[in-house]
Amino acid sequence: MSKKQQVKKNLELSAKLADYLAKNQDIEEKTAKDISYVFFSATDQLLNKNNLKLARSLIKEGKVVVKAEETKNRSNPWKLIPLTP
Image (cartoon, rainbow, N blue to C red; front, top):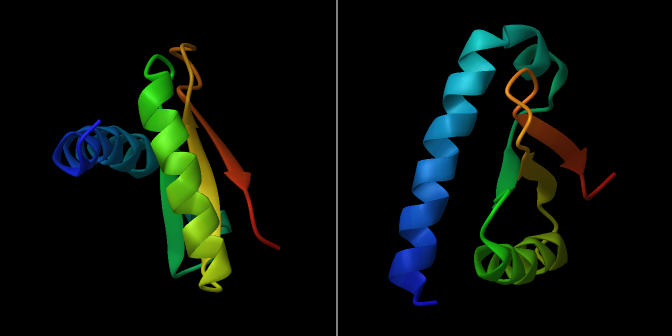
């Protein structure tokens, strides 16, 4: 997967997560500021593999990283998992 494809897919997932967070403001209020969300697709394993590398790199840089895992559950389409304390 090219970097361009990875960026495009991450932007699409970012828009979906932003929409979800806007509709569920209680979740956003509970999260810390300056978080780096790393997206994991419900269907694209190659993207997930590349984003896992990205998450590890961000953690090494000392960033606060949250795994934003897309689910296939319509009532709860995202699982947010902190990867750093």
